[in-house]
Amino acid sequence: MPSETSDLVILYHRQPYEEVEQEDGRVILRENTSPNGIVPTLKSFFGRAEQGSWVAWKLADDLAKPEFERVVTIEDSFGSYRVSRLPLTAAQVKSFYHVTSKEAFWPILHSFKERYNYDPVDWPTFREVNWAFAEAAANEAAPGASVWVHDYNLWLAPGYIRQLRPDVKISFYHHTPFPAADMFNVLPWRREIVESLLSCDIVGFHIPRYVENFVAVVKSLLDVTIQRQEKVPEDWINEGTALNERTQVTEIAYEGRRIAVSASPVGVNVGYIEDQAASDETEERLTRIREEIGEGRLILSVGRTDYTKGGIEQLESFGRVLRDNPELRGKIRLMHVSVAANRNMTAYEEIQNELEQAAGRINGAYGSFHWQPISLISRAIPFTELVAYYRAADIAWITPLADGMNLVCKEFCAARADGDGVLVLSEFAGAAVDLAPAVMTNPFSHRSMDSAILQALNMEEEERRGRMAELRARVRRHDLTAWAEAQTALFRNAEAHHQSAA
Image (cartoon, rainbow, N blue to C red):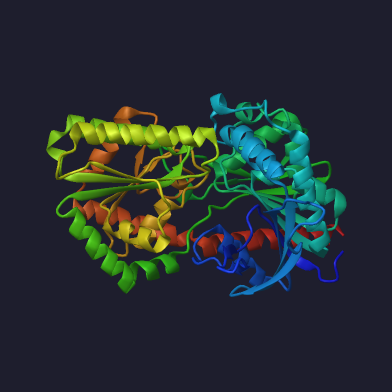
């Protein structure tokens, strides 16, 4: 172990800062500009540890002699912490991340079996990369440390860490949906993945449905015992929505070990978003946006270019609404922001082309010299600018076909300190579980999609404000701080269990 070891080690595929190349060719490591998002949230846990380490990968031409320091010490607003950077070749990154994670795992996690592609997967490379993460974690961890592994591309890391360091506490958090057993078990590596996850002390998910799916998968593959089951909190029971659960397993046992399984939805940094929404800069942008819109009404949709996000279905719904309600032409506009997740992948390029064709057809059919129904934006909008659009929008239309959580809808609510605005939300987004006052819609149903956006457009102010007040209360109740406190409590429980077992 290195001379400096950490009592908290976080494994995440991204580095915890931005690399910025200077004019002279030097690369500086700059703190993330926005405190909103998962990376700054995870870094905030270092403030609760005596010493923290972060493990991530970094591109290298030569693994034996990478042109960077393997371990660096970072000092920023979160304090001082170490970053262990794993050199991976471009071929390894493509195999581990773009092929195995995105072409095999991603479609199964989101229940798109028809998009699953097993053929190009190089499983030995996936194991190799996960082993490298595990070795780095084992080297960084102090005796009895907490090791926190994030997301499905590191599924095998917990099992390897347990082999190398049986003394540490291991938690794994899924940032995606977790599918039902008949979907997950399409993966030929299912048992290896599940046995690795059962090496953890804690396995965490956003919502109870994903916990129940995980437990069903485990029971289908291994002999486990359900140790504890609890009622789901009342404010997470949203009658009639697709992801409803009434009870949830909270602890299972396997081969003499107890594993806590938890549901704790990731939230947003409400205070930061409210400060941004109230800033003079946002007010100036808001004035310009409203001048541009005029008396028309703005519908805002923000997401990634991905088949799981339902972008095509949404544009087609907007086209039908304009076709069937000619009185709305010239009076409403859809600003559809769809940013490519990875431009190098054919699947995403195809989706982008389909979006452009659909928007072009609708604009051609219903637009005029003075009015264009759809503004399709494919570039990332800076968050400070996006907050102004949140405030300007009459409706946020967030309709993924599947989504682990979805933070855009929560950001929209947090930004609406004016108390107005309508959220139309897919019942297949994890956020639908704790945002019941939204107008729910089923993106697989034409009638549901069309009627939901019309309901939002026709909603009276009193109802709009009543729904938004409750939405804002829920977003505040389940904000990033609440999520962080839930994770801290889980680690504390794991610590107490380790001490009692010793």
